[in-house]
Amino acid sequence: MRTWTSMCFRKRISKIGKAFLTTTLLGSALCGFLSTPASAGPPLSVTPVVKHRPAYGDIQTNWGYGPAENAYNALIEQAIAENWTDQENPLDPMMFKALIAVESAFKTNAYSRTGCAGLVQLSPDTAKRFGLSLSPVDERLIPEKAIPVGVKVLAEKQMVVLQPDNYYGILLGQPEKKLSYGTTVHQHYQTAGTPTGDNLLHLGFASYNGGGGTVMRAMAKAVEMGKNPLDWNALVGSGPADSPLYQACVLVYKGGAHGKYREMADYPRKIYSLMNKR
Image (tube, rainbow, N blue to C red; front, side, top):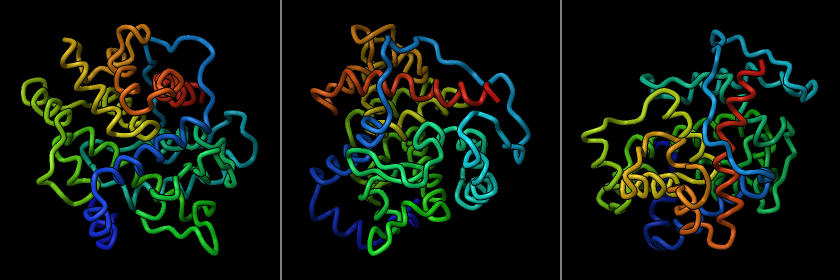
C-alpha cells in the first residue's frame, strides 16, 4: 500500500498533521454524498447477497446505461489484475463495474458538487495522492488513468477494514499512530475474527462511499452497543435511533449526517442489486 502513496505526500502530511488528514478524508467521502441522491424512504435493514456470481471475465451487462456500459470491461479486468493484491479476498470485476455504475453511470465527465470527477468519482486530494494530475489535463476523466486508481482506493479501504489498528500506517506510512476506535475494532477481531465474504464487501463498499474512518467509528459504536460490528445490517439498524452507522455519521458529517447515513446504508445494496440484475 505504501507504493501507492508518494514519499513527498507522507512528509507533507506529517507536517500538517491530523487536521489535514481529517479534511482530506472527509472531502473524499463527501463526493459520494453529493453525487448520489439520498433515498426517499428509510434504508433497507437487510442488504441482499449476490444470487449468482458470473465467472470472472464474463462482465458483459445490460443494466440500461447505454453503449458506455460495456466500453470499459477489459480495462476493469486489467486494472484489477494489476492492482488488487489481496488474493485471500479477490475482487469480482463485475462488482467493481457495478460500483462505477453507481458512482458515475459510466460517464467519464461526471462531476459532483464537491469536485469529485470521472468514472470512479475521485476527489482532487485522492487523485493527487495516487499520482494523477489535475492540470493541464484532469486525468480523473481519463478511464485508463482513473479506473486503476479506483481499484487502488477500494483496496485501501478494504485494508483499513481488515487492519483497523493500522489506519495511519495504511494511509500515511505511520503505523506507530493509533486511533481509539480502530483499536476497539481490532480488539474485537481478536475473538470474533475479521470480516469475510459479503460482510467484508459491504464494509469495503461503504468505506469507499463514506470513508474508512466513518465505517471504523460505526464498527466501534456497534461493539459498545453490543451489536455485531462485522454485520453491515447491524451497523445500519432499523433507523437512526438504533444505528451505529448513524452515530458515526453524526460525528463525521455533523448537519449532513442524516442524508449521509441513508446514502451509505443504501450504497452496498445498489451495487448488489445491479449484480443480481444481470
